[in-house]
Length: 115
Length: 115
DNA sequence: GACACCTGCTAACTTTCCTTGGCATGTGCA
DNA sequence: TGCACATGCCAAGGAAAGTTAGCAGGTGTC
Image (cartoon, rainbow over all chains, first blue to last red):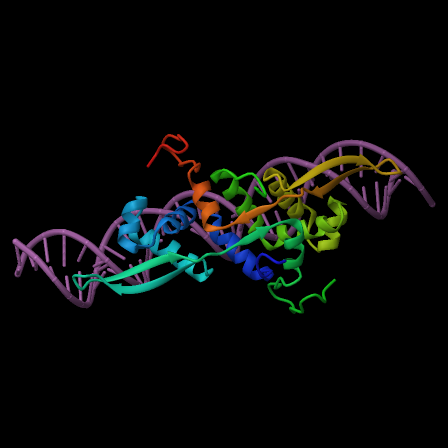
């Protein structure tokens, strides 16, 4: 009974690096409560829009949140973000499995044929 | 039925930041197979001792690995590291809960009394 | 037209992390 | 004594991430 598909090494690193940031954790937490648009979320979190943009971009790149462009009642373009229902389990065994598919910076990249 | 105690926000950030690194993931994976001492592990992973030291230090600081100083048969002091059987579950809900106990860089730090 | 709200981007600075190389210490063995 | 192996620490350069400030575009309302 698997709870979630085992992430590849690179995916795991990306997700971990993305979540390893207080601001991004707050963003995820806020979006978990309810979806929000950029400016509103920036005000809610007390950070600048430019900063939030960067963090949202990273979260989206990691597949943890998604953006949806909508039009408000008064015709304004609002970019609504919502959290993705992700589930990652972190254990030594999971990591050991993920490492098998870790890309090396410069050499070859045969999964499970390096050691 | 809880699988693991909910981590505090700061703990979570520390663990995530620690694991968000290919080298440290490899270290955890190697130690998950079997414990090892610094020099041997460095050779096994193909990295310098100094570099491994830094990564091991971070892993230990996050509570993911532990060090145990032992004496080999021929009287040499070997510092054996072994992985801790940690279990972290990453979901939007877990993150939302952890954010409640996130320390702010400069202001006060009353858990769950800010919003 | 001026204002308020929404969106996005880029350049530049600061800070942090990563990595290397060198140095110092201790043990056992030929 | 010299070599091989183990431990550790520190300084310094390079790479990456975080953050700010500013600019530019769009719409609706007074």
